[in-house]
Length: 513
Ligand code: FAD
Ligand code: DLZ
Ligand code: SF4
Image (cartoon, rainbow, N blue to C red; front, side):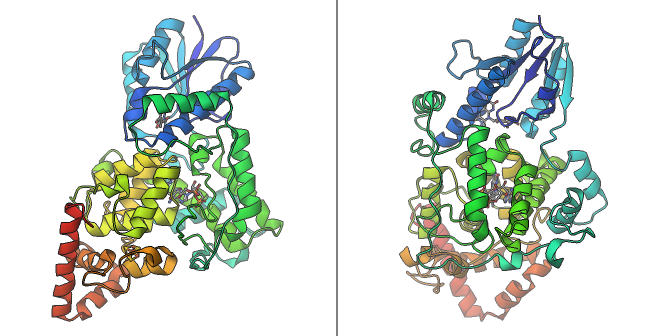
């Protein structure tokens, strides 16, 4: 019999967790388990599963080294039941704890389980808030409650003030402006190359996990090897320092740039480490702020980077908890088409899409603009089902957890929430992609052409999207210019473009685009 059973989930790998702070090395047991139910609730990329299991096993080892009693259930343990529900039940029977202690789970799905456990197990549950987030659910609700419209910019300013980040002595934003986004849209330079990224050595724990994933998930999407991920806090901190010292300086300027064979450019690759808890958001923001004060990175880069973490990351989490569970059913534009095969196999003539899917398959990573303006934009203007698109993003990226993925996909990329997250749909034609990338140079289509054999499919689909969704979108002030252009178009030309869009959609359905 023990006093307290601490249940730690796979994205709670932080020594600062409140329930760990309260754990007693003598009398408590810490439970962690790899379960097939979690591995299979989405079509997870092999690298994602390997990263999470390897990071969980290393974290369990660190806790053991610190003197905690850890019960770690591996996926292939003979008694592993395959679900959180049954593993908790088994641990309760084994240890007869007086109390179950946990930190609130990040996802609604798992929170429902916790509520259920409280009903069925006649034991006291002690549930701690997740203090790694910089805005609590209650705080976000209070901020949101009297607002007609939620907008990141105002939330972000509050967060800057609350956490005293990039403020001068009078609590005004350093440099005089809150937001330098306008400076962060440079097109890529020809021949641009970013520094080589770190590849961490694989120890016996990671190698065992890689063998396990190869054996148990052979048919899952994505390449398991090569595997470069950090799997401990120390390794993740090496990644963070590398980013701050070598890459942050260019992060702002080329934040929106896309290049083939350069999947990472100047992005941090820190999302998966922050999301599982190996790194904490506030420490990363402070590292970036220090780099600015030491003159090692310009303000547009530092502010832009901090805005993603202190602003967007917290904002999307707030929206998720405000709107769940209905959020997953959102379909404001009534988009119904099935996700095309090429999202899985990359087999499409559209070079931009095949390149992003290829990078995703190789690395379980794709940077923000590729997720938003290539795979997301296409899904939006082709009218793909938000639910199917959401399930794809949830599976294929190593950093994907529903609380952050769903608002980004359903809200930001697909506008399926009708504007809760974003003030306008991020619909764009091939001209945008051509300006911000070198993809079109390798493509059989031409971004300057809208109709005909060589026409870039994004172009006709873009106008078709505006036309088809006019009733829902025409009053959006940020689309005034786009609708004015649509109306200016001569009727025969518009008819030709709409007919081309239908051809594109027919080819899409036949897997021939
Ligand atoms: P950087 O570009 O270096 O940005 C720095 C950090 O800011 C990131 O590590 C991340 O923690 C944070 N960040 C940046 N943008 C966002 C954002 N929009 N929302 C939340 N945090 C942000 N991010 C996830 O962490 N998990 C997801 O499942 C996820 N799904 C997405 C789906 C779509 C359709 C889109 C458009 C975006 C999604 N994002 C998601 C946001 C963003 O694309 C990733 O956080 C980013 O690409 C991760 O790479 P990075 O660490 O190199 O980020
Ligand atoms: C994503 C994931 C996977 C693939 N496997 C596990 C697992 O076996 N055990 C575990 O504790 N967590 C896993 N995770 C992360 C969980 O999905 C994450 O902890 C929940 O989303 C928390 O809400
Ligand atoms: Fe993509 Fe169109 Fe450019 Fe081809 S021409 S890469 S389809 S944007």
